[in-house]
Length: 222
Ligand code: C5J
Image (cartoon, rainbow, N blue to C red; front, top):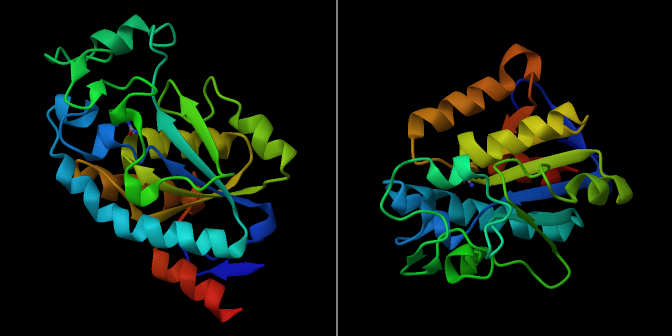
């Protein structure tokens, strides 16, 4: 067991019963010409999370934590994309349209790929999700259940959209969740801060937050 100095209080986890959920570290959100940029966001803001997320991945691989990478992407025929999502935003480039990295938010296109720094290793699970939450319309819950996972570490983008949605879904399913604060990022710094505060408020109503340093210190101290 490792015990992390976390907010709102210490978080203990057994690596054998823990999974890392690396949420949506895709070119579509982090690079120019993808979905995030089409929505008018400054995608460079998300790059701050890349080095800590890489370190977190290495740490979890060393500890034998189960690694799960998610990507938000739709089938080429868009049959898993509700019309509401397709039409939302009123932007020139929509989901399924062709952009500089192929069709926006479509699985198999360049933009849907993970950024090279965070590419999954062979044997690591990739979950393709049509929604913001990693549990909605995916096999994630069965996978975690079958692997005996009780604790989840969260990282990725964006903090208040897919990361927070997935963490709330996990919390309601009984998982003990910790968000690694510097390995997640938002296009809106104030929303990131608010999300971290909301998660840990009320005695950890959604879960725990800690820095990568706090997590790695706990693992080194054992
Ligand atoms: C968004 C995500 N922001 N991965 N997706 O649309 O957070």
